[in-house]
Image (tube, rainbow, N blue to C red; front, side, top):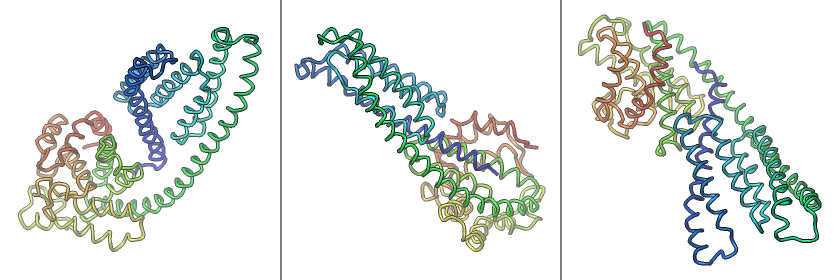
Length: 409
């Protein structure tokens, strides 16, 4: 089964991904606002504003946004992205603050405060230090290159000393606020982590015991469950990038999906060995018996696992009961169609098709990886949720990596 620490690390990676998207939207709104600022300047609404700063900001925002966008497409969970977008915002803060006649040093709190949304105290401390250094650099620039243009009777050194002292005090006060927020975030995450670990340990013990029983029931079933869980995780990770599912598939929900996937076939405990291990195609009577395993599995879960976390239990029940339903309504046990099938069942069905096609069965030879993708494409909108079929095709490289490192013999 998946190690919980891996999932906890993925929580931070996914949170980082979401916050990157949030700040990129802020940058995009700035880009949209700049033409209106230019129009206002042209109309005389901002007669004293240095129009050159607008163009510099525009170039910086466009460059920063494009670089972050490219990184996000190539490596969506790269830690480099957050530095790129925060540096883009910070650079614009510097440009504004060193502009002729501008003293907007309060803007230096923007980036340190934004860093708190990443839930990483060490990262926030780094940003505080970097922002302070950049603030001092901008003060030096103003003192030696801009002061003579509008101030007399004061030397650059004196001006620099006075403003450095005053702004350092202000910045330290801001830093305290940032550290308090960052520390509080860390405490909350750690507390939640301990609660989830407690629930996870309980789920893991129960799940491991049932997986051991299933492995005795049918040869190769344990490997099927392990591989399927990998495919479930990949599908969920890609679905999270879809706006429709991003709020539904939270990191904790994805973790529950992956854990629950190990027990989606728990109902086969009720199926006679003669049917499970039969060499060749099943007759109608045997097929009808086999098709009862989702309902038996659901009843088994309800009767023996009621003490589990409610959210996890609901996902487990949905996966167990509905993983053989089809998008077109021709599945079993209830013949549900479309979005009447719970998402957990549709995701599990996708993972099942991948593994069953690649590994084959007693009466069906396995297919090649490329052939599997062709069949998945054909199943789009019939057996499989169209979105999940498209996700499988899009995630083919990640799926192939699992396929190649697992023992499929």
